[in-house]
Image (cartoon, rainbow, N blue to C red):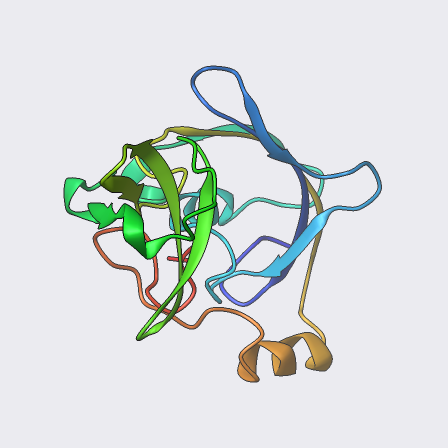
Length: 173
């Protein structure tokens, strides 16, 4: 069976960056499963596996536009240091989650001084080329239970946009 829209697929994968750093990978015997076309994986990876079959292996490079988007300068903001607990030691590279009027938001500290914290609200992989080594373990029709999970909001239901991310879930396209 070939991978098409709305098929269930499970893969073993290793994700690396141009630097060679491994960002994520499956554990042996525990492939990652998803339903194609439901926003569970990035657009570039989904596009690359369409038409493939169980047992296929491939090395795929996903450009930022088809991954998590380009890093955007307008998503780097200066936040007054006084908005953070006074006794909190804040260091560049620290991830944070804060509450906004629209719900939780995540950001990475880029710099800190006595007056401000420079916060980067881009996805951590924005602007990065993504290199996947993949083995397709299974391709089949999804079960009724798997499809009902999708219909009940178990996955992102968002449209592709220019940033490569979805506002409601932060990581699908």
